[in-house]
Length: 129
Image 1 (tube, rainbow, N blue to C red):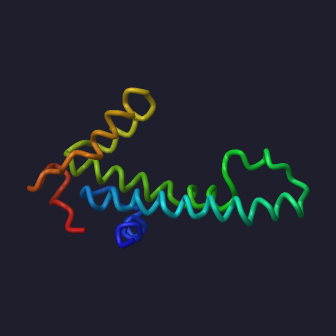
Image 2 (image 1 turned 180 degrees about the vertical axis):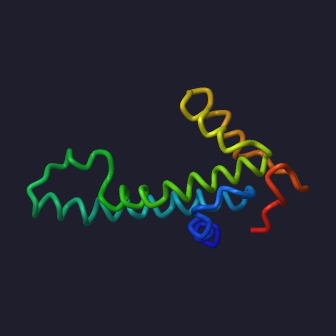
């Protein structure tokens, strides 16, 4: 949970580096919290909205209220953490633009699983987190 909170503390910091542990623990807790919120949305929120506001179940096909809000809150911390992760493998944050292509998604995934250098690189000293 420490790394999830750390991503929010560094929400506006694209300088520096994020090691493997920092990136993947953030991702793990993001997925766990997201799954819990999906359950809460499904069991409580969506049922209340459907019964009280005469909404249709089809209105919630893309996710619920809490999941959408959680995802929206996490956009910027996720992006800045990903940029710092790319810095750890000595790549620019501009590599995120590869996400606009199909084959680029594989390249970006590979960048996130590579071990960063142990010494200083173009983006600074290794992360101590």
